[in-house]
Image 1: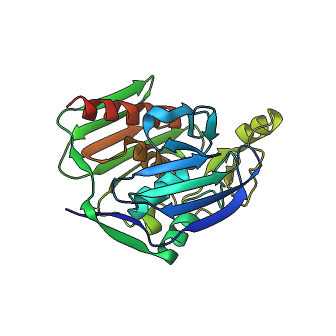
Image 2 (image 1 turned 135 degrees about the vertical axis):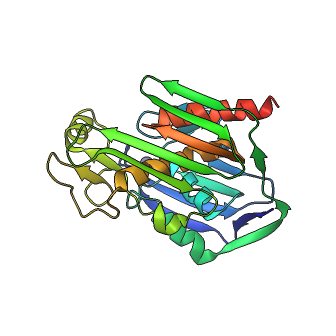
Amino acid sequence: MSRQCTLKDAVSVQGVGVHTGKQCRVTVRPADENAGISFYVGGQRIPALAEYVVATDRCTTLGLDGARVMTVEHLLSALAGSGVDNAHVEVDGEEIPVLDGSAKPWVERFYSVGLLEQRAERHRIRLTRPVSVMAGDRGIWAMPHPERLLITTVHYDHPLIGTQVAWFHLDKIDYLEEIAPARTFGFWEEVEALLARGKALGGNLENALVIFPDRYSSPLRFPDEVLRHKVLDIIGDLALVGVQVEALFVAVKPSHTLNTAFALALRQTIQGE
Ligand SMILES: [Zn+2]
């Protein structure tokens, strides 16, 4: 059994939100064992759990009693991928900074202050029956399995992408090397339409991979960077289950709406047992 971890010291980051274009300051502080992850927005505590998801339009937004924080998924993915179980995330603003569009800057900061191993054992639950959430041609399935395996596939009708498939062993993965660097992406037509609607205001070619009909806006960090970013998002959204779940996961064309609905279904299944 592995033990719970927190950070050895606080980490502060300031930057712009990709959707709002507004500056935000975030301080991730160490927390006691069994505290889990919580956001603090304007004095309001919002636990990082699936029942506090209030919006999933292009990013995951948590909220409680009028307090909201947008785009929590990359920070949650970085915490989960680094093995941080307990942290208090103070947010001065409305959206977690996008940084370079990936989780790498977060993980590097966490590793620079170091992780502190705590006494309590990490919460980990063996799934005893299958859980699934489906929507049209998309879906996520979890099947009881002693190890945490994730198979993901994406499909885009685009000559540079098409169908990509990969599997990762979530307990053995080198998150910093294999997943964290994969950037947020958007198709050029989509980016244009978002900008016209006053969205993606903080997006630019430094913090997102833009996919044009015949090229990428910058060199890829992985041949399957698009798929790996989807895996990064799934790891972040599944952190909203609040415990590690031993299962074989299969995700077909995942989205934040699907991921967070699935996280909620997993929580309900676990609580019902
Ligand atoms: Zn993302």
